[in-house]
Length: 45
Image 1 (cartoon, helix red, strand yellow):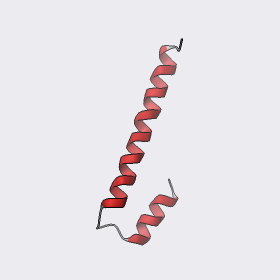
Image 2: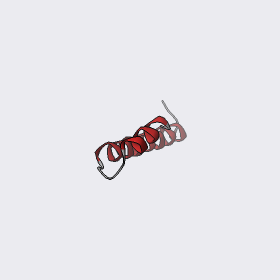
Image 3: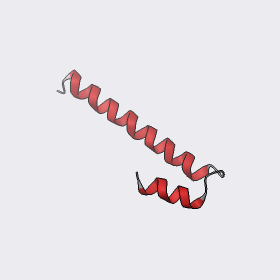
Image 4: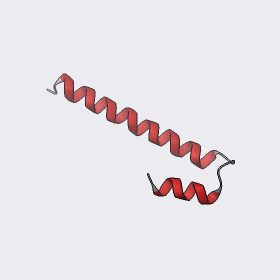
């Protein structure tokens, strides 16, 4: 059985991963972002 702290931390990590996934989706679909900048943003993640 996991402690409440472990459960909370895992939930926080999942939330952060979802935020990064959404950010990458915006990077890939926003036409106002230049291809060079898009590649640079992906390289940092």
